[in-house]
Structure formats: structure tokens, C-alpha cells
Amino acid sequence: GDTVEMSIESAGPPVTMIDYGGSNIRSVQKAFEFIGARVVVTADPEQVRRAKRVVLPGVGAFGPGMAALHERGLAEAVLSAVRNGVPLLGICLGMQFLFDESEGMGRHAGLGLLPGRVVRFQHQPLMPDERGLKIPHMGWNQISHEAIHPLLAGVPEGAHAYFVHSYYCAPASQTDIVATSEYGGAFAAVVGRGRVFGIQF
Image (cartoon, rainbow, N blue to C red; front, side, top):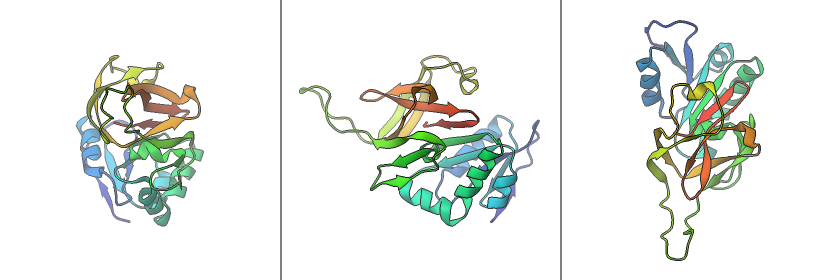
């Protein structure tokens, strides 16, 4: 696959960012570059297997996204990297890929790195006189810390983050939830187990 290496100086190995053909790759790449990271964007499974730090961004539908990862050999490459102890960060749809399955437009298997499901926000109002939730959940919302975690270092309680999603992750284990946000009830905004992490915003 095509590979582009950015010439930004930083300590440590570069961040290997997976481009499977359906992600918000450029905006995520620019964010990492802004904080001084050296970024390698790749669709090459072998480069992902050899990576030292992996980021899996994504937007859109779960099923087609997972299909694209499998078709390009990237799903197995990600699993191989994680088995080798490489830290993995999933962003937006990339966070949802970390879980066992999604109910989006049929049932679709995820990477199975974190136990749990991806489910849709419900339109139903919480009370008879309330209007239903607007789907997708889109805009700025606050996050609440559920655990002390390196991903939240320097992020104050109640900080605002920008969300765009119709589905949310429902981890099987509460201990995998690092931070939550509220939209018709609390949902997982940041997750983590071992060296596997995800952020929905």
C-alpha cells in the first residue's frame, strides 16, 4: 500500500496511522502532528505489524469499515501488533471496531479486543412530555472521568469534546470505561484495557 512519512521531529517511534480507505485520516493526522508526533500513514499490513504505536481512526458505518479492514489484511495486522504488545488507539469508529460486535445495519463482528457491543442511540423520549433524542449525537459534550488514566492526563473533569455518532460502545466490563459522556444516559466516551485504548470523540 501507499505510505507517507511526515518529517516532524519527535522523541520515540513514529505513530503508525491506518488508512483503510474510509477514515477521517487527514484530520487525525494533523492533530497528532500539532502535538509534535511523527506520523506514518499506511495501508500496508506488514508496516502495521512492525509498528511501535498504532492509531486506527474511522468514520462511517461499522460493517463496511470492518469489511475494508479484512479485505486489505489490516484487521489481522492490528491483532498481530496488539499480541506483540504494541499500544493501539481507536478513534471514533476506530474505537467501535475494538469491540466484539455492532448492531449497525445488521450484526457485524468487530476486532474482539474489548468485550462488549456497539449499539444505537434510541429516539424514544425519556419522559412523555420530552422530545426524542436527535440522532446522530453531534456537537460538543462534556466528559466525566471514571478512572485515573494516562489518556486523561491534563484533561480536566467536565472538559468538552466534539462528538459525531449514532452508535455508542457498551463495554461488557465497567472496568474498561475510562470516561463517560451523557446523551439520554451515560455512555462510554473513553475506554481502555492493557495497551488497547479508544476515544469516541
